Length: 171
Image (tube, rainbow, N blue to C red; front, side, top):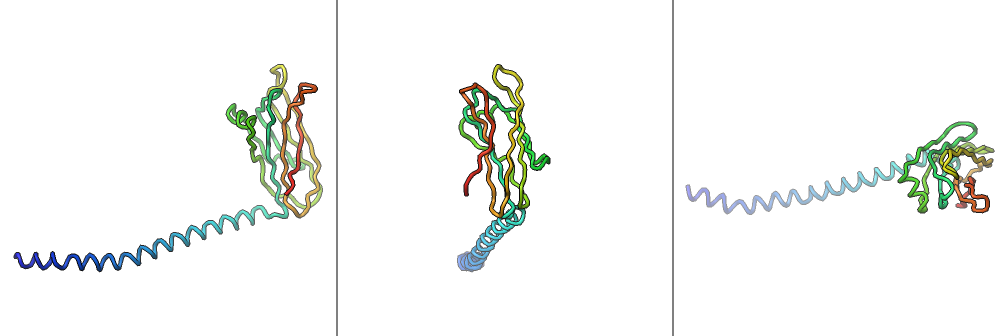
């Protein structure tokens, strides 16, 4: 009996070495497959974004708040050609982030080439802690390039009122 166990014990290192030799190329193959799958997934996500939002029809609208001493934002609604495309309700934390320089991506979508009307409606608390509703409108001429617009809420210290306007970003 002792002889059999000593033979098995002597053969174990070579068996382990054989298993390790077989497992090593297999683990490399698995790692290569994982890497290929991740690259394929990334490429598919990029392709999906390009298909959903082609550059020649793409429009992005961002929202920013400058200081916010005269206006506390509660909600915003964005209409393009009299169709509601985005709306958002704001929490105190989101207002705080916007007033500290944050910018929110409000809308990403597609527009056909031509003239379009963008209208944003703002609801919040204005001067004297009273409900405040205002709107801003912009006519844009969409061409084959992507459009990036910023909805800006700024304080006008001259009349102690908030101002609402659009700014087009240059690409």
